[in-house]
Length: 440
Image (cartoon, rainbow, N blue to C red; front, side, top):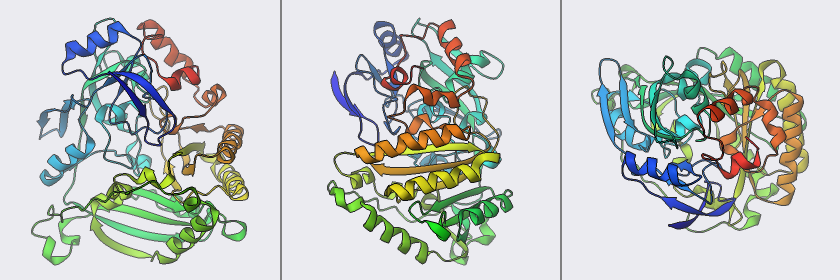
């Protein structure tokens, strides 16, 4: 069937021939008949899950298959949602070892993006916690990949943006936790330099993330609010929760009832929001529900409507550790000078580089920003690309929908990735609008 699809940012859109297989055999048939790209819940931001000739929608592959309680090893199909895993396993004392900023993603999508979280400096990427995956190829084979069997195919798949085939099943190690709550420490920093100092001093924290005011300038450039997190122990909870540490209040998810007008996210209202947000934050330690700490935007199901009908662009980059401070200063100065109105700006410290050939993280700092889709903002992002390249960084393919092929210079293992695609007959068979645009 033909459907008009887009990523979460609602730009670009493309009419695609969509198949919704119910079995492994139907997946293999779909891959054999056409050029195609797998798609999970459509939460990548750009065109990485779009292919007009064929999109293999995997949301029916949503079954939990096995759980080894002793080893903490979960086996599931690739279309299982992280939200469902949390709903089933958090009350039993288990949580995802690595999680992105939304739980409305599939396991296959998490592997294809090799997602990182607020604990990357300690735990690495999601791919680091995989035991194995079963990958369907267009030649009719299903290949089990692990660090011992077909390790190069696994390395190409983790972060490979779906360009190695369909992830049918995966097994990964879960994280044991003692409650459904987080102990959070809030730190306010007046400058970018102070934020970096706070991050470096908090390397022992399990989780760390900062909201950063991308429109601040001068002496306030890079002012931030840092949130450090630890999974709370029962004895750290309020007295009424200690006997039932996994009890949580029911969530009340909201919706955005309409597309916001363009002026809602112009410089003046975003500057006012940033000032109020910074002013309302109070330093110190609190204990609260785990879900809002990891997924603050999930409380609003259609938050992408805030950016209006034209949608938005998200830009995320990472810079090497020794280049991060100078490079981030240049990025923030360019954004502030251009008046790029981003109120969702996040700074994180990343740890060691992943084994995935196209995996995004490297040791250093990553900055993620949202902008309304306007010609002015698209021109700004091209300038940001140049700054990132100057400092030896890279952009996150999961967030990209507009970069030029030159952006792939940030991925030194691109040739190894292409070699895997050639050896397994994937070139020209498994592809997306993004892979064509970036000449991957």
